[in-house]
Image (cartoon, one colour):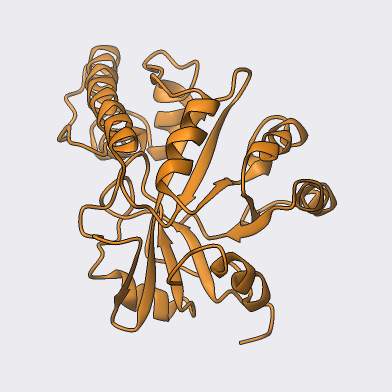
Length: 264
């Protein structure tokens, strides 16, 4: 392992939302990916099998986190909260979001079935998201694969798209700050205007510095935001599968992040 290799993957999803990993499978996946610390950041949901902000499983440190999508006015962005200690306010917001997810999924499935004339084999359950529906479309007799389902049916602007009822940026930051030790902006270069998205970091603790975009990004712009707003760097693979460690914090950056999380 080189000095720049990740030691912590702080962005991944499990079967509690739209990932494939279970908590029981997580330690082996972390070891295979060469990371000692992981953060479970399921969409709009606490993980039901993590009962503390920091837990140890088979020699792997697991940080209880969450990924919350918020409406920042002219854009929607994702916030990552780390060291979750559930509060009544965040719990109430998560329950509202999960109810909205279930109702939204039900409407999308109805639209897809009406549009394609194909019945989807899918269970509508807490934590459901469009990836679940896209997989069901891919497995059906409809003439769309997973990506085609997004491109032609359920992506924003598509004939079967249904918007979500999101919290505002300010409300999202407020409930996360109350429950989490660190609140970070996720993957800033996935947004239409990264520079404008990075300005939101004035109200945050951190920004996702290490992320597997698959294309070149302006790291100078990102590092300028870190300096301007005195941010902690976070980073992770955003894994929805079992391949961890594709991105994450190198040792020096992890030490600074860990200093903000009691007990880490």
